[in-house]
Image: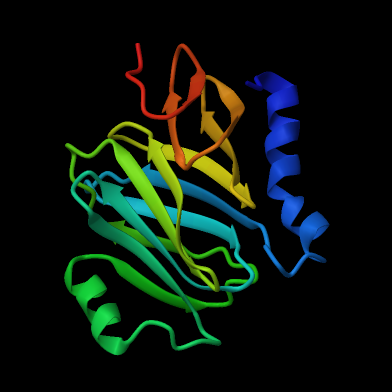
Length: 191
């Protein structure tokens, strides 16, 4: 587990891994950094930084309700039909057509149920759909990143009083706890 300046350096290094591994087309790495900021009107503003070569879409949902938040569709592919895009927006989520090689959209006015405590990120890539992150982040604002390559996950959390922390996991599930500033693989109860 990384904390302080070392944790920050490792989180940023992990976010830069896609450039290092870009020469291996068999399993391109994926890197996603997601931040959700609650607004005064009760809505959520979501910013997603992604490097997802070989992917056709990224889906971000609030959990456990499954509420759609953000659907990024690579503008160079037509992997998702118009019906699915319309269903996503009808359910309250935002749809953005972008270049998934590298993107950073910011979308506001999203609704996340107050009872939800997790955020899930799915990546639709050449090998099928991958559960990239199942982050237990609580019911307020959040900021986390995940870097995936060949079944290995590096998860990072950021909280204002804690700074950056990271953990290497064998799966997509992880927990970001504010004070006492912990990050864990899997879903655990925060103190």
